[in-house]
View 1: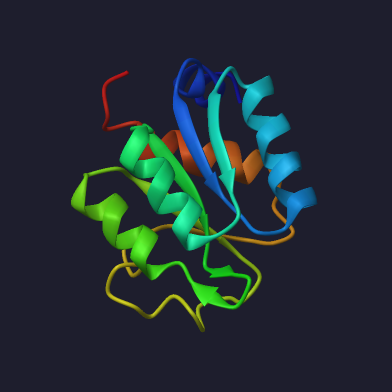
View 2: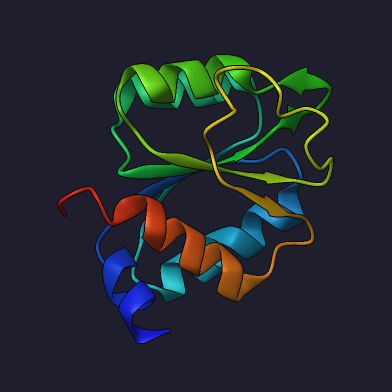
Length: 128
């Protein structure tokens, strides 16, 4: 996966995930790929606050944040033109909101290879 890894090096990626172990695993994986990680943000409010202060190149978004939908975060990312992917254990059931419909999805438990490939793909159109 050298091309995908090269695409991620130096990129700022925001993690929005309420499960601490999942967030830590993603953070570790992204740092191994040379990314700078913003977050993880475990709630909608923390994610929106982070977006007010920082501008990531991309984001990984859990659809369900401790019972709250991540749609407001997706809307903020869309408004700023920041690409994101959904990491969810719920399939398409919660992804029907218009703010989420165009985002690629990866299922939990997250495959490291798939996460890297999909993240690289959504970043491909954005200059470093």
